[in-house]
Image (cartoon, rainbow, N blue to C red; front, side):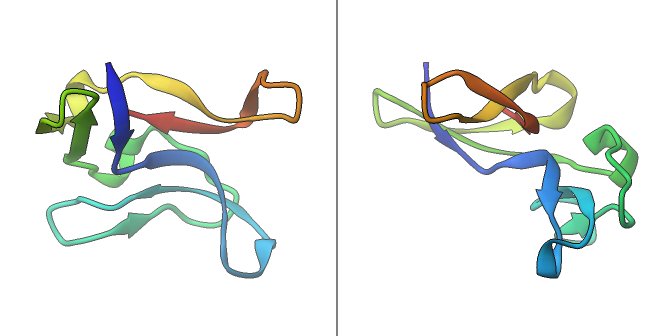
Amino acid sequence: MVLMADIVEEGTASVGGAAWVTSAPHARSGPRVSGPNMLVDPKAIRSEGGNVAGVDGSVLWRKQAVMQPHGAFTDSGGTPATSIIGWW
């Protein structure tokens, strides 16, 4: 079970909240962000993957190719929000 992870996400508000982007903290050339209003699969911006921490205290590297999309946030009622998708 995943406790926390480096977030690779689709639906991130860019600086000033003017546009929505896909962002990845670990690409071959460092952190990457798609162009404005481009919600693309993280592999399209060359995401390599991210660190994933389990409830047992372990931390593992997970390649982007095996990451799955999840609702990254919940609304006030606890329902996963679909506007931001996190990959882990």
